[in-house]
Image (cartoon, rainbow, N blue to C red; front, top):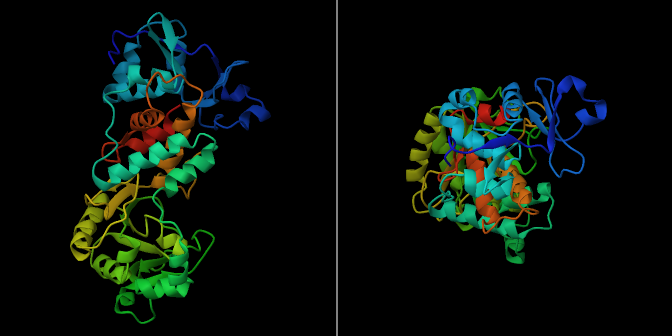
Length: 385
């Protein structure tokens, strides 16, 4: 995209409304402004657009392009190396329009005009799974956004066959297979957390005894996914626990406690405050788990090419829109579902919806060639309007 030569305008199907001038019913609209937002872009009558909260910066840009023209120099200077991704996001979200062949376009059809070269969607096992999940989501055109996000999140889960149900009739059978038993040597360094309103009944969670005063679900941070195939899980919990106990920086780990949970791709999850600590732990675990068949977790950053180890960075809690219990994979799945659904009523002109979703996510700060969240991504995503 040659931004200097392009002509933009504020989408005339939106009107910008100051937060203070919204009525109670309008404040309750999905996407409406919070107390710290400048206001909202409110769709004009008959426009099939979403309400969008906007910051002061986005509002000023919207006002600046009330008349068509080049992208403002002041905005380009402020955005710096984030210019292309921000313009792509604003155009494909319908906030701005770009002139093309004598008319103005925005939304998903404008994707080919504003996105960089298409993303590969990852490499190795995790790349294959992530693209397969998106292709599957593209076909599920009847699903509403929450259900579609759930399908993307759960993609790759092993089916609960009658044979598996006979093999693992309850939590005791799963625990025995995983090597979770009273008095196991690895438990000396770990304290198991009891269930609480902030911990799922489908997980068993352990804190290092040195951090046993901490309870509930670990706060947002970095998480390491350990994903052996189900048939390669025997004794894996002890191996993981022993390796993590001597690795600096680990806070806690959890493992699925019932059959549906260990059929998930993300069977074991370890929590860290710092990415450097996670990487050291991953190196230790890669050696300790060598030779085990992998399952693989879609939409995560690969550590090993086979998908056995990968990682993500949970979003921080942020007001009404970003819940304290969101996770990296759920956040990604929700965004991808949103972008896939945005293509349903659009003339995509040969651009496959799954590719649009991938490129739009990249414009939001995720390196979708590696599934690594970019540095400084969360503030940009959380404050974008």
